[in-house]
Image (cartoon, rainbow, N blue to C red):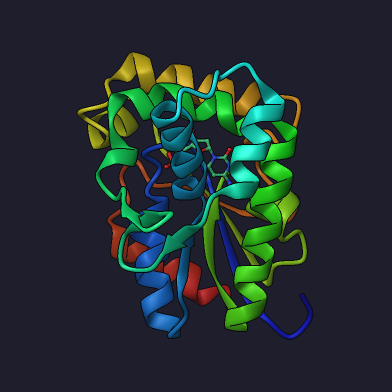
Amino acid sequence: MTGHLVVAIDGPAGSGKSTVARKVAAALGLERLDTGAMYRAVAWAALERDVPLDDDEALAALAGALRIDLVDGVEVDGTDVTAAIRTPEVNDAVSLVAAVPAVRTELVERQRRWVVERGGGVVEGRDIGSVVFPEAAVKVYLDASPGERARRRGEEGAAALARRDRLDASRPTAPLSVPEGAHVIDTTHVPVDAVVQEVLGWI
Ligand code: DC
């Protein structure tokens, strides 16, 4: 990945990743990749096509076969799923799908290709600084108190959010963790623009 400016932003749901990633990308003139949307796209397609969520092989085959376009929204095989991937059903399914190693292998490969094709980018997720781009120029791990994160993700509900975080942090493959060398910011009481300025200061 030498030569590409990669800013890796990891953290649990509601920690502020998307907002911060969007603003950092705009300030740097880079594109932003929301890797969570890719896992959501696979989960959405699995529900849509009745692929059992405990069938790792079928989920991996599905992930490999889908065309996922992340431009202004999210498209799966040409269908706009921007809103459909944010439903409670997808929230419940996505951590199961994301725990399948072969699904991750497929999506990680796409994420790396995405960055190479663009000559860099701001990439947000759970394993970006630890697995996808361990050599990223800047690694950021955002966090916030459970109460604040639940408030930000109001519609999902504190219990569902806690379950998803627990699954994401406890899976054997590429669990949510603070990557080595990451700058950790607790965003609970920090305004977004201050977080963005702090991140830009590390570049
Ligand atoms: O960022 P998000 O909440 O939209 O992500 C949805 C789910 O996708 C999250 O609960 C775990 C999974 N995910 C992952 O396993 N690895 C990533 N790099 C990004 C998301």
